[in-house]
Length: 429
Image (cartoon, rainbow, N blue to C red; front, top):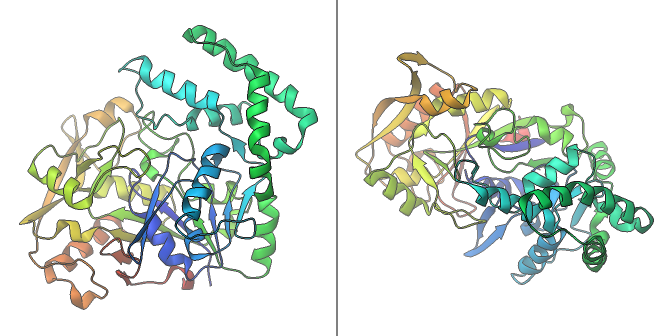
């Protein structure tokens, strides 16, 4: 049996939440390993919708869940989410949830800086959620972050706050906004620490113990490979590594612990925020995809940009992420279209290429080269076996497999947990 890492293979919003929830029935524990509360997973279970941002999807099933050191954590957002999910009947307690004691915190000053930058000029817009994730990662790598464990070390907290504010108050002066009062910031942290610290644990040690007990571990990623800070459409990316290699570093386990890597990809493509999107549509088909697919962000409610499936970008994402199989979601959204298109290559200044270039200028310049495939009139919504799919829908899936050079392991046909076709069990691979 293998541990499994689930990662997005596009620009996020691929439906990872449902897939992780479905797989968590086979797992013993679920680990979130990167990102912050800028990512959102929506689960629909027995007609109840759960919107998660920081909590691993396994909590809905009552599976032991871990927030790893690779995640940046807004403690106020975490407590709010725990309370909100609790009102839906899911009891989140320290027996179910563990928070890495070496995870870095997102503070109000990070949110302020994020929003100030986004609102400074249109030219500088990245399209972030404005929730402070980028600035928090900046402080982490600059070695001035306040971490979860620091909430229990009050003797050192004053020095850490002073070091942090030396940097941030200089930035705020330059931006023409009021400086942060260290005394007030400390008071805010002290007010929340007793709600956060009961969840704090050395997650790496807990996971090592579970691995030695041969427990099945499910690693849950956020966003998607095209938003990876190294391999995505830089600078229009998130501030963490979203590919599967981060599952090891972001949880405190070695690479050998990861096992099978499952990439999630929609049967078409979406993205939010600014940045290149070669297959983006601006016609009636875009409206159909948006409306049928309910393409609005879980966290922000922003309307997602929609386009045809981009086999070039997905194939590249699967290679950089070491993906062994994909879960294709939202096939049913394409039902009834007379034809569907797939991007099989790019045209860059008159040259046909089969990769997304690293250059921001070239990424913006590539034009999609399409292959047209016959559509299907039959409904695929809710299908739970290949026999329930039309011949043309199956042909579409098989052609995608050929183009991305990776087999489909799962096929999701609705938001409901059980509307899933299992082709290859990742845990048995």
